[in-house]
Length: 470
Image (cartoon, rainbow, N blue to C red; front, side, top):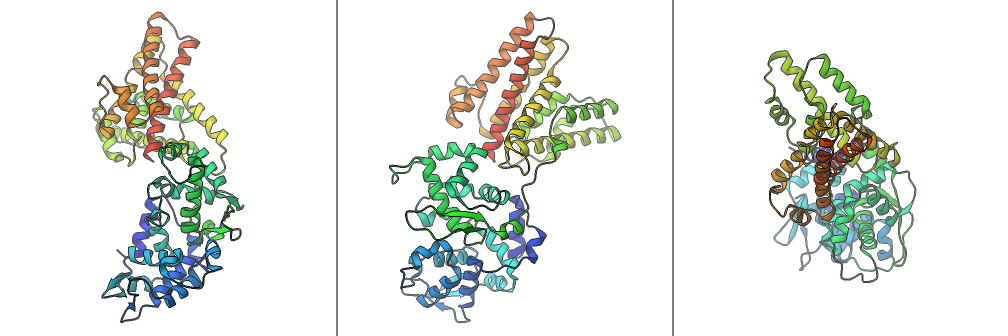
């Protein structure tokens, strides 16, 4: 498979869908693209002779910088009179990308064009851009800034890019963008707090995260690809301000709001109940749906066919009836995955976070109603299996046996104290509901509130697992 097609498929796997409009967009002055083109075209059939230390000759470095420099480079170029590859990030990046893509290789003191390099030159500008866009997600930019331990910065590049795509085109400092990022994706806070920085004594870790994000993502990833614009060249004492470029709008699809009709709600659950009743299907909608949420709590998702086959072992049905079962299971899985996407996604277009909270509570209410039986004792019995769904996943994916005496301590060590306490709280709630159920002959408000709290605790745990995995 060629460079372009492989790159396109990799981007799709990252859920970055390239818009058709991109291929008609006029790609002008893309620093990294121009720099790569200049470097490759500087290599003739005999190869490009390198310096004694193995660097690009200054003449080529100068030519590359003339087209590959960004607004962020202006503060360095303003007083620069020499053009050494090792002194200019933009030139180093161009060469690094070319070597990582295996477009060039060093041979007998010369930089020579490879078969892939020749293939790259046959691609049109848009195809070349896609190849470069894809590889930048894999380049170790921490190598250039000396903070290789700050993996969470580069790991946030995908969601930061989508956040930029979804925002209006206003110039903002990077600390504003990181604040929005952390508000929408709080799981990142744990990674940031675990980082240790020894050279920023007067700054907290969140300020440091923003500083590294500006250097690594905005100046050295997004700017060279023309994905953002910098308001103006900054001095050493200033914060840069950035806005998404027009290209970014043309390049990737917006992270659209999920299909609301698939989200679990009172309406969705009633539709599933009606289908089950109409087709005379023996599915415990409450139990099996919560089972599915646990099954899909970890990334990568298990194969849908395997999950359905495991569920079908509970039903001795054949022919058309079996097809009906499989169809409803597929629909349930689609709703589970859509619900996960809604409540773990970074930013939903057209939906404010208050609406997401409202949707979440409606879902909790709907499942709490679904869990209720006529008698409290029966309700408590139904809930007894629910923690096992989580314990099975913890054992399968995290090698944690729920029967061990020090379970909470193990969970603290593997995850954190909050997650361990959530598990403990779920079990205490179940124990209390079982005690209350023995005393009650009918459902009472306090008991039903306890059921709702139990369901909410369950979803907090599986959503946490899903978010961590993402």
